[in-house]
Image (cartoon, rainbow, N blue to C red; front, side, top):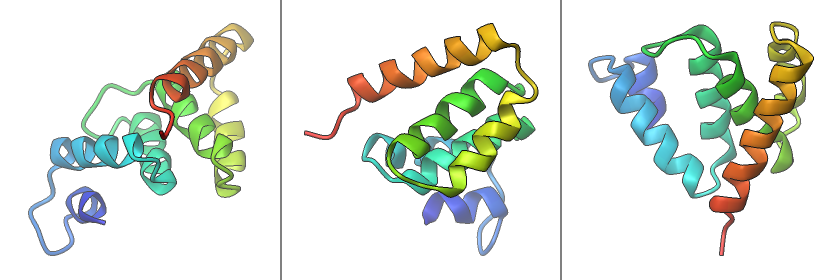
Length: 103
């Protein structure tokens, strides 16, 4: 929730770096909504260079955790990528999940 406040600037000064850091910490704890926000951040290039591979990776992680709204977003992101890039992003997501599996 705190990441969303910094992302939107609601009640605090908008700070995309702080928001991204908080979303990453939450994503590492399995908070699926934070993974979707990270996908959005990289898709839009909010405070970071636009990176469709990372946007796809984060949305694929959200899909893997059963977050159905991520399915359509992941498909949208894939429209901006080559098939090879989609495969690489899928490998990145799988690798991230293996490293950050909840114990």
